[in-house]
Image (cartoon, rainbow, N blue to C red; front, side, top):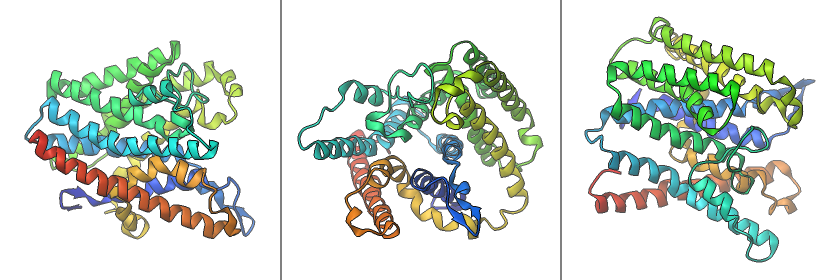
Length: 358
C-alpha cells in the first residue's frame, strides 16, 4: 500500500472524492440513459466530503505518529500553510472574478472574509446559528472550518490527554456535543460532534500503525459511539422535522444532513473493513487512476466553484461537453499550479526559514 510514504489507496480515494464533488455540483440531477436516471449516482457530494474527513483523520494521525517533532510550532505551521496558502489564491480568484463581472473594484466583503480567515464559516442557508457565511458563495468552504478545528482539537487532546485515555475522552466529548445539539445547535457543538467522524480515520490509522488486523471487533466499541450519535441525531430530526420546510434543499440541510452524514460515515467504516477482507478486490480498476489527482485534489475542491460551476467565458463554443471539458482541464491546471508548484515553492522556502520540515 505504501510508496514514498504515501498510502496509495487513500490517495486514490482523495483524488476521486475531489473530482466527484465537482461532478456533483456540475451535472444536472436528471441524466436519462436508456430510460434510467443515471444522474442519481452523482447526488452524493455530501458523502464525498465525509470521506475527506475520514481520510484526513487517518493522515493526520499517521503523520503525527511518524513525526519526531511533535511541537506546537511545527504542527501548527504545517497545517496552517497547507490550508491557507492555496486558500489565499481562491480568495483572490473570487475577488478578481467578482471585480471583472462588475466592471471595477468590487466590495471585498471584509466581514465575511475575516469570518472565513478565522474558520468560522458554514453554509448559512442550510444550517442554524451560523456565524459567518462562506466567502463569495463558494459552498465547499464550509468543510474547511471543520477541518481546521479538527486539527486544533486533535493537537490539544494529543498533548493534554494520556494516550490510554484519548479514545474515551473523544467518545465522551462527541456524545455530549451531540446531546447539546438537541438543545441549541451552533458551531462549537456541531464541530465537536463531527469530530467523531474525523476520528474514524484516527482509529483506522492507529490500527494500521500498530500492525494489527482490521476486523469488526477492532471497531466494535467505536461503532457503539457512532450509533449513539446517530440515535441522538434521529431524535433531533424527529423533534425539528418542521425545520426541513424552511430550506429549499432539505436533503442537504438541517436537521437531516447531520443524520445523513453520520449514517454514511458509519457505513463507510464497515465498508472499509469488508473491502479490506476482500483484499481490495477491484479497487485499482475502479479508483487507482485517481491517485494522480491527489497531489492537487485540495485545489480542485476549493476552486471548482469559480472555474467550473460558475464559469461561462467559453459559452460561445455552443457545445456543453466540450465547454465543460475545457473548464475542468483549466481547473486541473490552476489547481496544480497553486497546490503543487506555488505551495511547494513557498513551503520549501519557509522550511529553511523556520529550520523545520513544514
